[in-house]
Image (cartoon, rainbow, N blue to C red; front, side):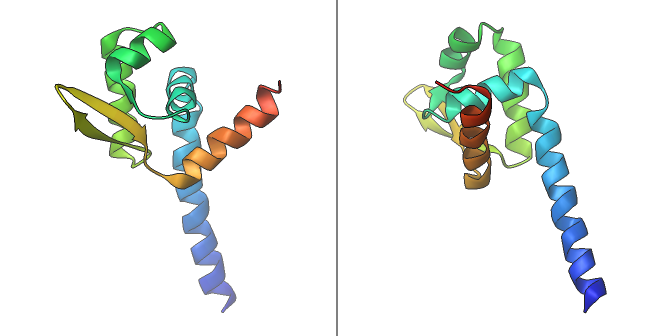
Amino acid sequence: MLRKASGAMLGRCESAARSLKLLAHPQRLRILCHLADGEKTVRDLEALCGASQSLVSQSLARMRSEGLVACRRRGQFVAYHIEDPRILKLIVSLHEVFCPS
């Protein structure tokens, strides 16, 4: 019984560590903070983050491949949003801790 619980915990810890590693990059964290307010296009995120289109797109692609964000077509644009509700909850918590009003 204990081994099963330990194995399950190890899996959860590894999953959490992968997500936290993605969040540890300032540009990806900034993008997620903006996405916590709602759906945004790459162009929106470029303006909000002051970053190039290629940097924003690369960051989104990495987070998308890990299931943190997802996208949908909005007219001729692609809009991104936080897909994983745990990540949204984490971003909101980080905001409360590090960006108090």
